[in-house]
Image (cartoon, rainbow, N blue to C red; front, top):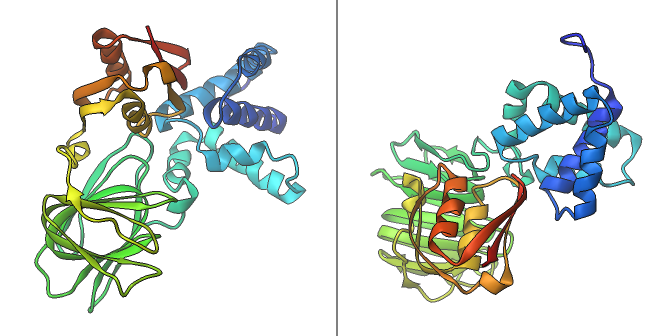
Length: 318
């Protein structure tokens, strides 16, 4: 038996990281699954390292791509390899410290003041008394001073309820600057564009590369924006802030779109069979148990759930 506290073979850490990256950050093939099983069965030590990795994955929703994917880059230099091994050793060997490192991933969250992991939601009160909710895998930084209240939105989705204050409340995203006009609103952003939904009051959007063309979005409306333009405001769908209450709300939503939304709250990969993509989903689903949501889909829709592993799931047509 391996003595408690004994160092782990760095080679096993590196190999475990490779398998985690393949299974949890990409699209594993049947050969990948067989290869991983063969690797795990090589020795009790292989099994122990893998069990530690799986426990970490269950706790944090899967190994982040920012850690996993560099393992597959065979061109990395020796210094990068040593740095990666230190990171993986920390992740696999010190879960409490891993929580600190994981919360700053993916890369957009590095340096963020506040962040959430996959599947986590968080509510807090800002220094000015405003309320802030963070959805799954979200991150923000705060820059409050005597002249302004600036929140830098780095990743994911947030809900803000501003408190009365003479200083302007601004949200800076990768695509635009948003100015709250006494309001409650949600902001979601990814690499391609952002989305603003206004629940109360109004919000002004100024695209980063076209600041002279602001658009004011009133309550009950939403708009999509890029660095150069803002869409015409349209009706805000029901349940736009339901996630803050732990609910995924769907009203005649395409199953493919529902699966993509549900995937944000789960580690690994969740796919929808194209043959089932146009099936419609309606309901309010509790986000604290995404496995239960999948079970409900199978019970109420003409679909079945195919699971290669906990982290590789397909919703297939029956």
